[in-house]
Image (cartoon, rainbow over all chains, first blue to last red):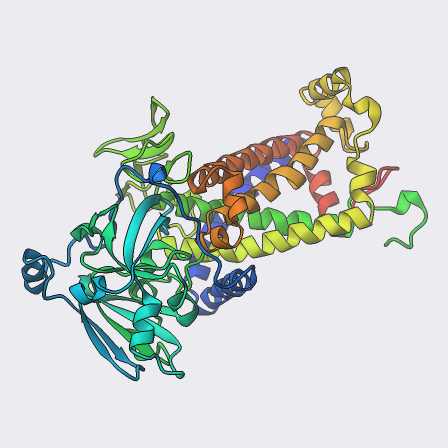
Length: 252
Length: 270
């Protein structure tokens, strides 16, 4: 009797695990279930923004803490003729366009950006995959650019357009104004005291230190201020959000 | 149920305990399996703040063309068929670290794995908090898990440990108040391992690092927190396996029914 019961229990446990897997995969394909799962991200966003000072700084480190090599991920080279030509002349002709909801839309050259006040910070880059690297970044605080171009009151998001394509689609990302005006949010053009390498996003990449790596758009060509993310790409606010179920808010 | 004064009518497990037990069991299973999906994205563990492919990993799952392996420090163990190189249900060779039968979803998707993980992390965390509060207020912890003076004596702990290797003692235990090994295990899981999972999980979040930097510092950095998160999950799996063996040896049907319906008290309220 006991043995039969045990065997039954073990068998039903095995069937249960098999059923659970099949069931989970079916649930995973169900849009309503996916929406339910995604609701936790809304909670993450709300709670993380509610905790502490909304302008709290990410941890900064010393020179001794730097990763020996800063890993590059995603696009390592936009690999277009225009990009290669620009890289060959040290990005002297690179242009950053501020468009959309600005009173004074701007076009900045790399030299113009470098002549503005700069911020240098040693921070930890946390990839969604789980790895981390510590690097020293130098760049112009985004807030300075937003003030020069006079961001309009109706703007809610900043969309970063990039020179690289993944799977044939242009890479893009977006952040809200809280991160846009955060003191550590910079457009970096230097890494570890040298010009930003191509693999890490030369000549300009976003640093948005309180979020995961895929938010840190590389090879930036434009910043578009918008009231809504609808109509940009597939409307989810970023490349990875459009092609997979990555979250727009990547604080965890 | 608390209006019942006749002790013999008290169930062995209270309703809160039973509800939490099953919700928690489901959450932990899903958290483990979706966690393995997330681990598959970067199957390497480090100590310290940083760690990526060029840095030294104390633990890594890897694969070459034909074999899968687990590397622990300098020791390499071949794990073909189980880790790093395995066949999926359609017979194709896959090189992700953990196999499809152990992950949610069964086909690698970091984005979907994260969605499952964070949704059930909320249910798990809220459930654990409510269970802790309720079990303190209804004195479940104080009455059933409190370690009495003599139970701390090494000879007592040793005797109880030895009882766990004797079938007869295990069979009898289901009618008795919790023994010292059970108390230590349940206290260790509820008040140390489970909260540690939440803390190390939060310590990996870049936004939490800005909000509560002490949490990441407590574990010696983000990559250390990730390692502790993984090791603690491993300890919970170990607890689960021993828990299963004990349930199977002590009368599985009766024990499982007791955790569903409450069961008979026989003087010991849980």
